Image (cartoon, rainbow, N blue to C red; front, side, top):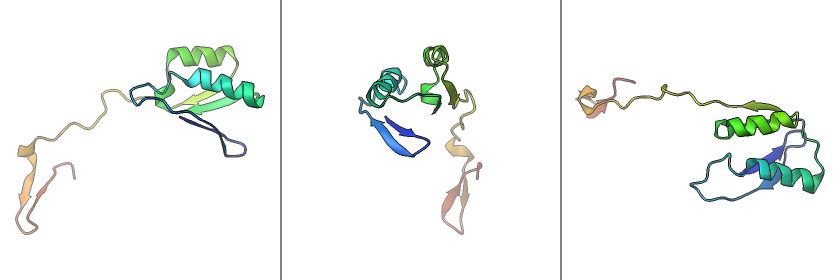
Length: 100
C-alpha cells in the first residue's frame, strides 16, 4: 500500500500486508498514522475500487474528507471464448479469436 501527497507528489506512506488482505482493511489506520506523524489536514482522497466500502465512505464522510473512488463494474467482464469458436487461419498457421 502506498500513499502519495498530491500537491508535492511525494510518497508519504508505504505499508506492506499479506497478499490475501483486502486493500481496504488497513486504510483508515494508515490514514490516521500519517495525520498523526505529519500533522496533515486531509481535505480529499482519491482511491481505487479496492477501497470502495461503505465503512470507509462513512468514516471519511464523518471527517468531512472529500473522496473520489473508482467503482467495480459487476457483470461486465469479458466472457471466455470457447475453443470451438476460434478459426484456423492456414496461411498464418494460427487460430484467430472471434473477439479480435
